[in-house]
Length: 349
Image 1 (cartoon, helix red, strand yellow):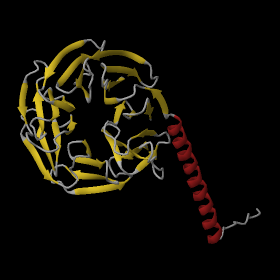
Image 2 (spheres, rainbow, N blue to C red; image 1 turned 60 degrees about the horizontal axis):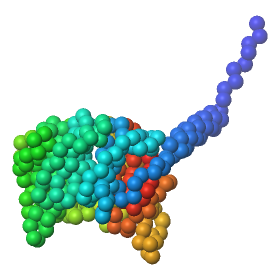
Image 3 (cartoon, one colour; image 1 turned 45 degrees about the horizontal axis):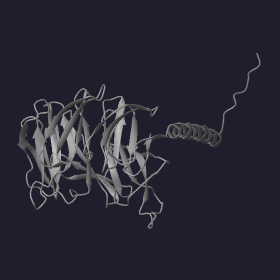
Image 4 (cartoon, rainbow, N blue to C red; image 1 turned 180 degrees about the horizontal axis):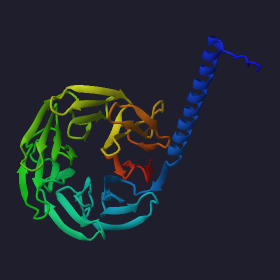
């Protein structure tokens, strides 16, 4: 019987072939990632919304926007997402509608104005009640475990001090003041998992139990300022600033800085806890502001909440003031909707 000779590959040849295989695999993964990124970016779209939209909320399906009417009536509008069609609306006069919030089941929409909070049925936008705050309400937040409504107000004294009032939205009764006389106590964030409410003041962040209203954490930090934006998941506080270039993460119990990311001056921040994703609107990188029109382009970046890694930055920009006040990012399912005060369009990512 003839013996078939065994051919043994040289070590160098084996190593070369292995490198070729690895390089091919890496290229395939890169191409797949690129295609996935392209698919993500092609989902970005614009929908028409009213000019001077100041507040945003959702019932999990629709996008609700409050429109400042200035000399005319204000509007609360409901839009379908992602179609962008107007579903229903209601008006109120005078029309200085600012922030919005929705309750536990998304059945009620709370719209803040210069002296109180209008309550609407989100199903048909019928008017339910009015909560008289006795001061200009610029921020509202609903805590689902306690069922209480938190309102950041300003102008409670001649000096223009800020405060946070707590209301029972069912009766309209004022339950408490938890941050009376604070300088900038109008920045609010809620973690529905722990049932706690974050109140941003000047140089300090305080976290309250949403039911007992007892202070759970008292953090002194220079990151807390009038232009600070907050997202909060119960253990971490995500802070962005309209004048700063970075987004920072703080430990909610100690206040120590865990990490930071440089993006550019921010205008809104939202946390999708289920997807473990941060959505941040900020100045478009490398884009110049128009000094004559006093407007700057803003875009939205998707960032991982765990390690602050930028997943992608949107390509569609909205123009607004260099120092914007009423920008909002509203998460609906796995999508985010960015609205700006001076834009008649919203960006869906």
